[in-house]
Image (cartoon, rainbow, N blue to C red):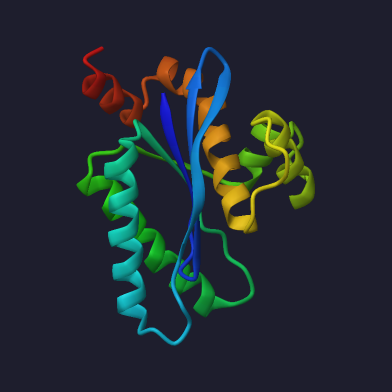
Length: 175
């Protein structure tokens, strides 16, 4: 299964594309979509949409794994990230890619096995699982790869549970 992991944002959107077969991950691509400060916000959203759509069209992932937005102390940041996340979800929908959402706790448990793991622990375990020489930079890219790993680990139980996204995936694959 080809999985596109996304760490949502509006300045830096991390992405990671992994092939997951027989409990083994193969790195296909990773990086970040960036928008510059000072550019009108609507234009930044357009850039995110266009670049993510091009990425989806290039790799044709079978699933997209996206981090659920959590509230922090800065309401404006949460609102702006939520708007960018909406654009990310729209790109997936328009390209007919099923979206699966995971909380930071779920990602930590899936990648490290411990829900209170620190960011460095998650990044190092992501590096180890993917057999990379170093932790990908920027951090948003490593986070996106962890999102894809989380979905790979969860996909077996999701298929068994018959969740709507996995039913859509099965239909798309002709299963």
